[in-house]
Length: 334
Image 1: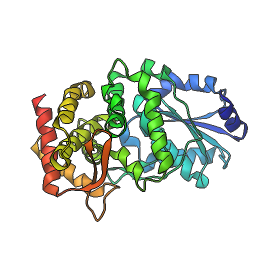
Image 2: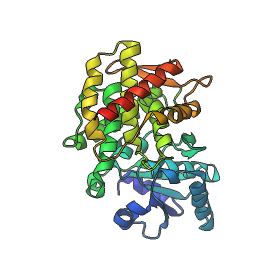
Image 3: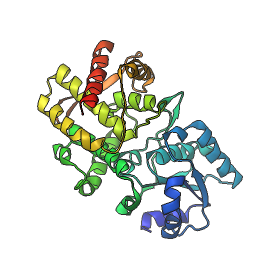
């Protein structure tokens, strides 16, 4: 335990650990041992985005109350992006805020979800509709968790790492299954630097939404089907649409799009995707509820060039539909 963690624990009245059933079987006892908190109250929930909802938050709140958690209690969020988003939200709202520490166990959470102070839950069938800005006291990154991480989760995380390549550092566009571990810290540094300049997403931080406007709509729709996608998989499809729009609208070099299309099979290799024309309208329907909308119009982050994002691009609905049709056509051709 490092000095900062020790200081956190020294000021803590009671420790709670939130995790899901998948992670608990591998890592819950180890975390309790590593952090010397064997008397922690365990909160184990079902795994999956479909449980990132108000009902689960209520269960967490009730457990905190049952065990008399006061404002000096600490919640440790052990898991992927669902757990860090959900746990951060529960902690930031319980008694107007208790401390929490994130221990991300997926690649995506290590490079994105666990960092930056965004918390949230899904509501009304849409992604992250309810949430807060609240910083974790500490984020513990340890590649030991990759020992039990499914390959599909690694591929999902690679999509978020490539996002940083498009918006900030072209070297990250070379990330793949063989070299990704050496770039984890760098991705985290990029996000922290952006968040430091714009913690509540008034301007610059919006670049982190590259690929997410369409990606969140795709993810929300797929949660209602027999083939739900992981967040990174949905973002990969969202980035495909955003790159196509960038070529069309801002003159982005088409080679950037073509190179990404060569990487798509790697990012989607561990999932089954079944889209058809009938999915287009439902996906577009979710865009109406996107948090970043202005005057009910979706706002896209597009690229003039790699490393040169353009914020708040509003597009005609027919153009967005064409982008989604392009995404589906590329999936059909693979």
